[in-house]
Structure formats: C-alpha cells, structure tokens
Image (cartoon, rainbow, N blue to C red; front, side):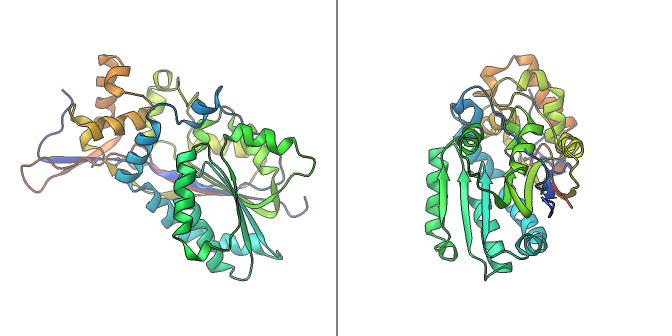
Length: 347
C-alpha cells in the first residue's frame, strides 16, 4: 500500500503566485517547490466572470467541501504564507493606489472566512491612515460569511469600515452588477485562490478589470506553474476536472490571459509547503480529508478506482513532494503541499 517509511516525513509545496496588474490613469510533511501568483490587473480592459452550472457546485461548497477546506487551512498554514507576502508587497502598491484619492473602496472575491481580507484592510489602514476605507465581499458560503463577520467583531481597527455583503457566486454578482446603470468601481480587487472555480479565466479577468478605478489594482493569488499541485492536476486533469473545477489552469496560464488582454504585470513567488503524511495512511480521516481537498473528491478512497488512487498517491510521493528523515524510528508527519504560490503584480 502507499505508506510512508517510518523514518521519514514528506511535504508537498503549493506555492501561490502573486500577480499584480494596475489600471491605466487615462481610462502539504512533503514539500513541493512550486509557487503561486499574486496579480494586480489594470483597469483598462473589461472583465467577465463565468462559473459552473449551479450556484452550489460553482462555489465549490457541495457536500463536505467546507469541512475539507477548513481542515486544509488548519493543516497547511497557507493563509499565513499569503499574509506574509501581502505584508511585503501591498504597502508600496497601496501608495500608488491611494495617490490623489479621498477614500478607498475594496472588493474581495471568494473571501472565505475573511482572514486574508482583514490582513489586507489592516495593511491599507497602516499605510494610508487618513483615507476612509469601505469594503464589499462576494462569498457564496453563508457559514464562511458568518465567520468573517465574527472575525471583524474581534478586530477593533476595522470597526468603522462599512461592509456590503454579497452571499452569492461570482456569476450572480456579475449579473447583479451589470443590471445596474451606475456600475460601482473599486480601487483594489483581490482574488485569492478563487479563479479555479470559474469556467472562463479571460472573461473573468476582463469583467473585473473593468470595475477598477484610476490607479486601481487587481490582486490575484493562484497556483504557480510546475509545482506539486500543478503537476497533480495536469497529470489527472480528465479525472479531477469533473466536479466544481471544470478545467485546471496554473498561474502560467493566467499570465497568458493577461498577456492576451494587453496587461502588464509583476509576479512574486510565495513559497509554501504543508504536511501530507496522513494522506498515505489509509485509515486516517484527516488524511482522506486532505486528499479530498487536493483532488476535489467527496470521498477519495470511494470515488476513484484503485488504479487511479494508487497512481495519484505514487505521483504525490515521486513528483509532487519531498521527504525528510525523521529524528527517530517513529512515524514523522509528511508535509505535502501540491504546488507553490506566486504573486504576479501588473505594472
């Protein structure tokens, strides 16, 4: 069976790419080495978003997804890695975004429980303390929206920031926006690991780019090319792209779309790895939850054939992760994070 040696630990890297693109003024313990992008697209072009057929599956919250997602966040430490990158990059971007402005308006897409949103808003406040900030949040999960609101209640510095909540999918938000004659625009729009759940990356980027104000930025965090996560999904694309994710694209593909839209950008790598030792223990519930999240399956060991399961576990071990020797003969957790994050920033 696919079990780890007792003396080693394995980690996989899911490195996000940080991509930034800006508006034109005139108008898992196995480690993988990939990175994910952070992007700030400029507002010169118009963007449209498209998601899956039903609102529930579009958002990726069908079945036990929320439980899998929260387990992943707890184990992986991904949010801390992204927040660290925000701390390094956003201050200088904030100065450009806020230049000549009397207030800042921020839109979060797929904000989840709000941990990264709160960090972004606090960073903006620290750099531009004299500018009032307002925020809108698009998040289809009512449970995660409630978690976000609970987090805000514990964040005194954001007490005076007005929020508008849209408990809906991106496609529903787009319809709501386009139905208005007076379309609201934003200084900062961020898409943290949410583009996987849209069917048309280019259209999504184009629509939201059209919602940027002068000097506005879009921040995209997405799976970097050639990382563990990228290798897994591109190797088993036909098997895995059947549920909430209709097709898999990496940050490299996102950059191709940005190039085709004529947008300049800057990319930053956010190295990150997490423990996937439990994934190789067939009796581990946390391990199966992690496999469920990484493969978008309801029950990994029941949903896929024995041949595919074996192939995925072999791939995770051989191509998507690294192994570290343990300090003793006891089983040491394997850190597995398929794919690195990169931040891409548009100029």
